[in-house]
Image (cartoon, rainbow, N blue to C red; front, side, top):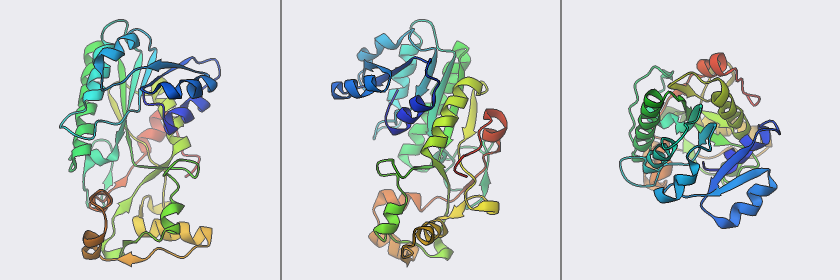
Length: 279
């Protein structure tokens, strides 16, 4: 469900004999999906009546569709779960969540045992979805994994090339005001999705993040973009204070600068057997 950039990378990484069915709400995408050895299923998670054909089809289910842009709950995942309950249920369900469920942790190291503390509406919808899939797993004996994902990047991902910010001289915070950032390459995320489908433990949360910053783990955002600029031979981005950021940046961009955490990925390595190829 949700066969965009990451979904297509998952398909490319799967063994050729695995049959993949992907939902799409757009008939225009059907030829594209078929060309990538995907069986398309026209369905829309915002229209529950279109989901009845999903029931009984899924051996393993991967939910990559983001929640709606409004409301207190993730009605899309709720609709998906209702359809999966109708007939034979999948062996496993993997839900793509976000590290935003932890909220601001003031730069502390964070593992999956930390209580969630969502501070944005979109993160609250993710917490709602995590709760829904976990309950579904317990009640239906389905092995459910929630992947808590930070910033996704790749040079060939639309809007996901981190050098774009450097090229456009997008400002970053001064060191004193800066926050810690965490990332995962889109191809490594795809591998983690597959590993969770086959090896994820029942009703288990996984932080999916790379070892950014060498020995220190996550990097402060400005240091990350400075390193990118240096590697590409480009000027480093300008630094601004938090007060200047509040006056000039969009609310969405600012929301990412209000939360600081360093994500631990030891459970991903130990239980899923995934070590980022882009470390």
